[in-house]
Image (tube, rainbow, N blue to C red; front, side, top):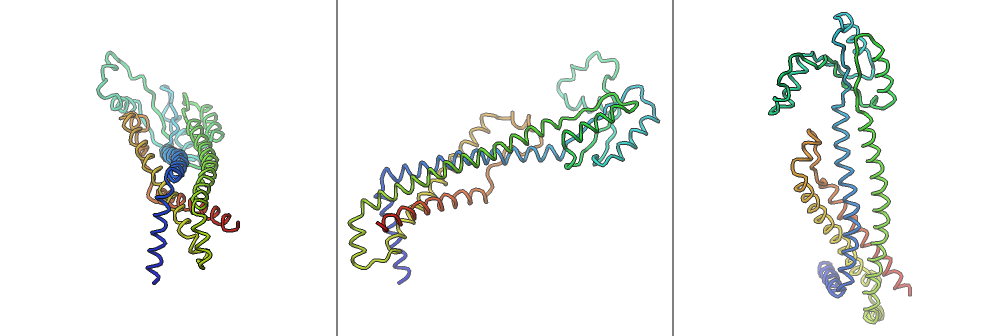
Length: 300
């Protein structure tokens, strides 16, 4: 008996869905657009966060040593760096090692070094910085104090770029929430209006159902399920479009992205939990819009 009732309600849902025509298509399209825009912001934010996390993990401060530095001065610098709370570990790179590393990086373009009689690259200490100390103030103070030491020629760090990218991510998060919220509310009203039009089109049929004793739940459930289906399909369509846009962008970029963001994972699509959440949220959005429309009609 319960199964028969459920099958009947499901049949009514799909019948209402087919009756909706262009209104249903417009409703699904509106939800798809809302979730597509929100998904773009989400995808960019997640991938840029991965880049920042990787850069933060591998972030280095390079302390360049003067060519005239003595062994005693180098030892003092080493002890000073080992004692810094902000420094996670210290690696010494000699002039010879620096040149060999540079040769590896320009492999295939060794002609650039032809005629080079002396090694112009300085020895250096490469510092890995603890994440909690990766701020412009801390690193600026550390660089200024190190430059005052004898035997240090210069201190190089690029934390400002990481901070700028982090600020960009925060802005994108806020924009994603605001734009997603506005488009979500707009989609809610569109679904509600679509269902309301469907309800008014069947006003006489619904009134007869009420006169013969049909319960409110029996009338409401197919319409709410219809809205839920619209929302879920709209979100699923948005995911499909987002994936196509994602793959198309990667194809256009080719190897450029991997060259710029070497060692990072800037090629990840939304994980399964995010995709499920988007479809579930779309279904919930459609269901709530339908519930609002049906309740208003039945009160009248």
